[in-house]
Amino acid sequence: MQTNSKLFGLMAVLSALPASAQEKLEIIGQPIDGKLGFQPAATDLAKGIQDLDLGVLIVVALITLFVTGLLIYAIARFNQKSNPEPASFTHNTKVEVAWTIVPIIILLGIVVFSLPELFRQQEIPEGDVNIKVTGYQWYWGYEYVDHGFEFDSNLLGSPATLDEDVRPEDRNIRPYVLDANMEAKLAEAGYDRNQWLLATDTVIVVPVDKTIVMTITGGDVIHSWTIPAFGVKQDAVPGRLAQLWFKPNKIGIYFGQCSELCGKNHAYMPITVKVVSQEAYEAWLNGAIDEYAGIPTSYTVAAK
Image (cartoon, rainbow, N blue to C red; front, side, top):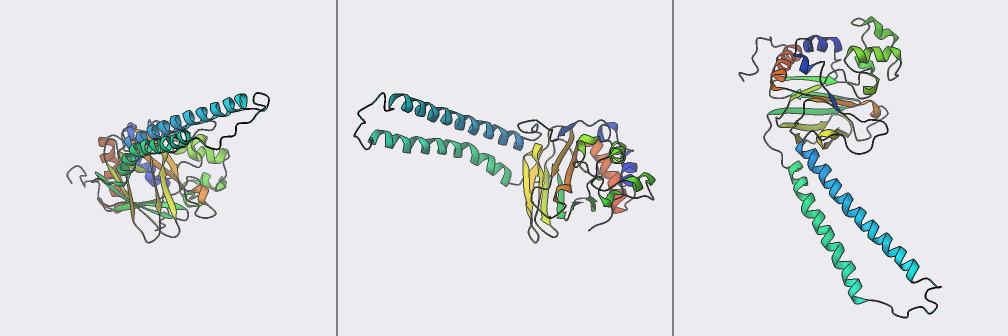
């Protein structure tokens, strides 16, 4: 399905959108060098996962401190200097019962809180927007199945996004190399060097506070579609269909990457999602239908 995407054709479509859907979106879901922890949660799924992770981390930290304290106590209390005559007992029934029952209770507590999060991810609701995602070596194909159009999404700066006929400056760009020429291309698309290897020539656009259901598959080898800030990750397996869902609650730009080793250019297979207002989404959708499906812009999305 490699239909060489036209970056500037897309930009022409986007130029008709409200500013909030194009230039002034905050970049929220992005990895940052030197930072620890999760990206800001932009869905209830992500918040639930992060809260669960924090809860388990607290339990693990308390267990670690307790065991460390016991080790220190045992070293101080039962060393040879303090106990020249070693004890002769071989077991303690009460202690053995305790260290069997207590871990079971802890594990059951973790299960009680983790299973609801798992079920929330696996129980797919009815989608307000339905998108089919196909992973290829090494780009993504997206089909808005409710509206009959599809497009490919490539790393901005990959060979598929370089067209000297449309942009003469592309002749100076070396694919997959970040230099001044590549920075200029990123800036032209509304990004900077911090979004290198994250930004794509075309993007998924979805409305805020709406349920997005994605059907995932692979076109050649196994890939994996992931957006950390949404708390979603699903393998794209050739010959199989899988689903994920999310409901973004923050307008902004979010990045992800293929998370399954899929060949030599695996590192150059990013994902870009823009979450916009409903009005901006409808405006984008009309333009996208005209651009990718060849249906005149008089088509009214809101009337469907």
